[in-house]
Image (cartoon, rainbow, N blue to C red; front, side, top):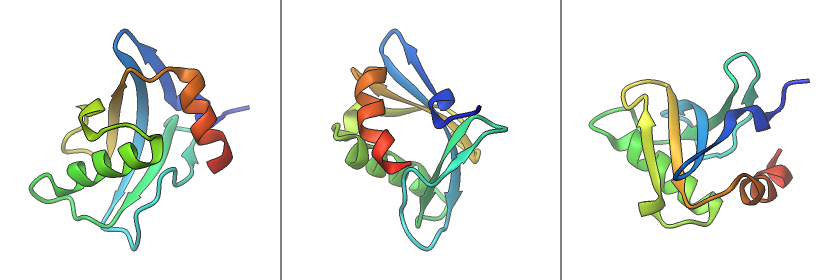
Length: 104
């Protein structure tokens, strides 16, 4: 059975998370569900997808939820797309599951 865990991968530098972004939402929410077809965790942000505002809001929200500094979070792909891959430097899969499991 598909699980949000399928959206998580370990890289040499940390954890990769596949995201499906809903910009211009009514509130900031992470995680905001799971798309089993795209194997991506949803993230809803109030910022519009204009001039990098949505990307900055994604980094802010991910860092808050995952308990890491903003400098540890980076967008690896999908800078101008609703589908993104982010990296959290120094985070392992076990720690990510401890944080995310209660939220699903």
